[in-house]
Length: 588
Image (cartoon, rainbow, N blue to C red; front, top):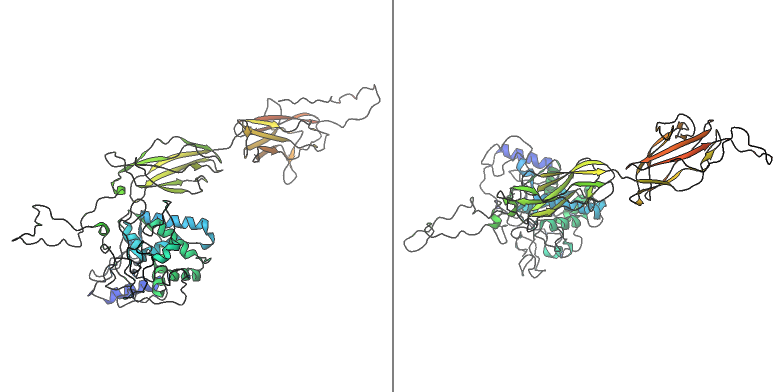
């Protein structure tokens, strides 16, 4: 499956200490891992009866046609160096191997997010994609990808011509693998063309399905693993998914080893600096395909050096040819756009303020620049929402990655405020570089109303010790529009000029039936309507005031009257002394 595998080092010294150390690692990573005398995983692929090809792999039996893969196991978690520098497979302390190139890591996490939405029952962990990416291509040759996630040169496995590998004749006329005779596994996740034809996905939204693009390949691998209704939180179903990728128990154990390793912790490293594996299940002859072996991050783009005049490179008569350059010092490659970025600059981002539930009018915009202040295009910028907030970018995500345009500018999707008020931060960073980010303060304010009105005009009256027949119903608006989900407070006040709580007259009841004269935590509905609980009266008669206020300053005072019930009297007989006259006038 993996292309350009490094050749196995022969004649490497073996010691009992090294063998024991690496064997212990193998035993700790996954069950059933076969190892050689040095503790390395055995190179022979052992088919498993548990494999599931899925029936669409062009007869290959797996997504990759069971092509070769990297067999390097994760390092031991040890603070000590390898016991001997001459050991063929030194034991790493782990820090370098735990690093995943920034764009590659972003692709895995984005694929997990996409599958969480489209196939939530699959429970795909991004660490599984990272584990497969490690054994397939060494994380896209240590992260040698451009700003869009496409490898600088194609990653191709050996010809599947039946000579030591499966026999798969050409199925794509060389469209994906450049070979019109036999198929080859292609890209960071090593799909054979016949599988990619139906499993390919567009993971970076550029309208193409490119197996050499890490975003496309990671999303395709996620869908491939999640097919057939699998739930990858169930170990047996995860095993079946991995075996469907490559029908080999040894492959299964290797992937599970890296899965467990990455689950224990990993970190982002700049693109092009990822650690590269060196041992292949295909043996010494597995370095096939165009381009050199990925023994160093720069080699995928290396080209033969051209002798310069006067530089000792002439091969004319009487002149000895120059000695070839050492493979350990490959020619330098031009820096990627990302590598030229020195800092981020704000690109005229305005004030970030919005009301709860509303979309921010301003978007965060940044510009990537060189040290000299020149704009850099085609650089990936990640925007992240940080802090105690339920605000998101459009689409419901808390992170978004954009590529800078020709002016070096990247603009985040619009922010959408949630219901939680207060401040949070939007942070912009350059993907693939360890540079200071830019932080933007954002604030969500509470929903508000500027006007409150009663929705009925019935006089609110009650007899002493009785219950008001009608409940108070209100309508809240803001700038003439219904003000939904606005907080309100209702208080029975002493007078129009004294807003303190009254200790007599009408009252509400709480859940235990106790007297309450102030209600908090009231909220208007989506249409701005608010209906208060029932009101009751004690034995005090008179005219009383109920005041309702909302966030934003809207206020309404409602008049409540408590009086004895009217009695029938003979015509012309004056009403008993002390009986209040009817009134329909509300005191604001």
